[in-house]
Length: 337
Image (cartoon, rainbow, N blue to C red; front, side, top):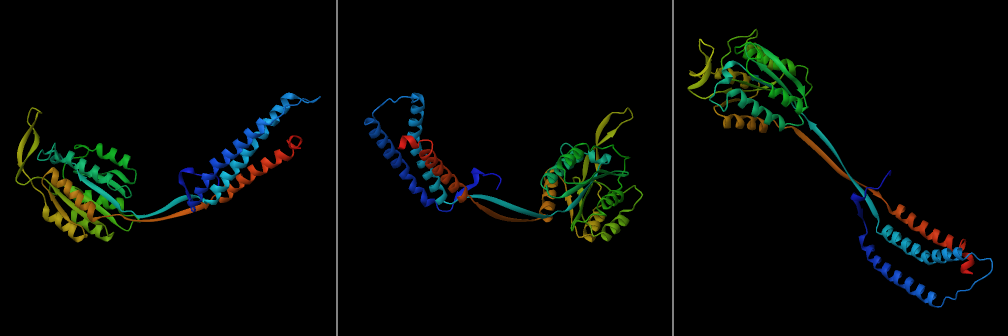
């Protein structure tokens, strides 16, 4: 053992600490004997004796019994069997690989969510990431085309920063659901995780992109990737930002159109589930439900190891006892005589 961790010391036989009550008694007996000897001490002077040397040796002799008492103290601690305990934990987790695929088209600026759909999506995505510290999570964004905003990582700080940087207008406008799904599949294609998941969120109908959503669905099925789909938007009409001929932005009520049949097909055929979120609270609940459905398997094996410290304390006690006897019968032998 390289060191003793005093914060984790336990005692196997603490009943021996009752013997500590003997320590004050031994101190009192020693003090009484010293007082008795001092009262009967006759100071004599001899030729060639160094007075200061006699004084030091006399004082040293008076302290020797306390070394013996200290040795007794360490013997008592040794009898109590001090042990240094250390808890070791082995954590085995079967992490999931998850890719969030987020629609950032212009329609995601609709204000039927507070403050708008894209900001609400960013908030719940951030909360979801914080709740999955042992999973690798990646981020894909899409509109008229798709882009990997962040590859799979367990670095939550990096991932949250990339979520924060998402905004509408980063890519060509449109809704390429097939591209968003295909790019997410590509991120997971070489994953060795037992469970691979895509959470795809959109508020519209596929109207652009080089890859058809059904083709992307077949690729996801080939790689055994489970896809959860989320349709974002209120029912009926919603206020969308539009620009007039003067370049000013104003809100205009427009119908909400989500290809729910496609979303349902993608999720069902991959073993996932389709959710419809019509408000901020509903969107938060969707991510909470997915979080409950996809739990990371964590196995913790905990065991405690004990290192016996009996020998160390007994050795100190024997050393103090030896030191007391050595000094008494060598350096102070003339006084004893």
